[in-house]
Image 1: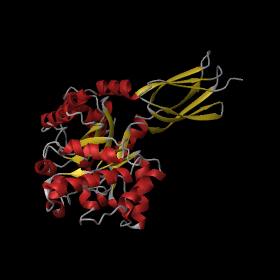
Image 2 (image 1 turned 135 degrees about the horizontal axis):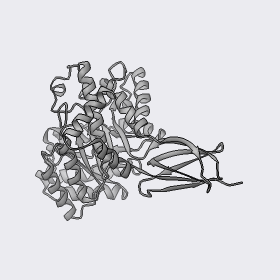
Image 3 (image 1 turned 30 degrees about the vertical axis):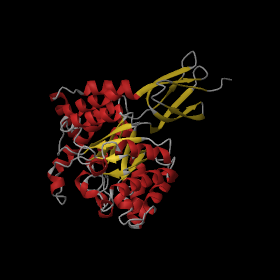
Length: 410
């Protein structure tokens, strides 16, 4: 047993979140029966190709803007595809990033990221349409009259949604509203519902998420629950709940994470962990980004990452976890990266890959029984099934629970 595993098990057992209970929950909520029907005694091979669950990461502007060196860009793309099946724009879609000066809108970076994710069949979240924290609102926006501000918000909501219709899987609507909402302060409490209406005017199929921080620590959970209830009472069509996963320190409160997810699940909406870093924003590594971890700290950090993912993956309401940076070259908390500046894998990378592509991966061989059936509990995702040398691909989805595939019998 590795040091990482021992450390993880100690923490889980000490907090009454046992490894056994987590594994049982993962088996219950992340696996469904895969049934292959063919001739009796046929040789069967089952190979998982990808997860349905989102194991993703933020994409830095450099991928879309061309401002990353060619060598690093090549490595960045290759390592992204090796580790992740989904993505979110880190900064490219933010209003202040797209339009720092009135009327001068930069679509190049967004388009570059979308082109690459679409070429590689990576679903992409749009982060974010609006961000009402005062310091992130452009000066020219603040200079607008109330009427001008509302019409400008409406124009952005409609134009972005219309331009990228069908290309972003979902959007963060107005980021971190419980921590600051300049637009509501200026225009009143109904502005959020109006934003939603305008986005849907541009793209009737757009899926809009809330997104906020210090929720999974429990510190602002009640505020977030109240905000969600308020919006739902106004019949605001929320598609899901986003919660940032980086307000802990070098460790995290397991019970608070589980309890917060349980509380958020009451609304019956999908939950995404939208911005994950380990260590997080309350660690010494955020305070001093030049700090390097000792070998012991690297091992402990890998164990913390594994625990966080296990608790989230075990929860039935969670549909994805997206890292907020995975390479030291473009990560706001460099110590939380999977790879060093020169692309060397850190212990966290190895622990992550073992978890996602080994522990939580279905690959097996066998033979059909006397009735020509082969049963296996399989993680939800895409598969290649081969029977007596003939292959088919299939999608095994949580919504169905059970998936059957038939092969012709002679």
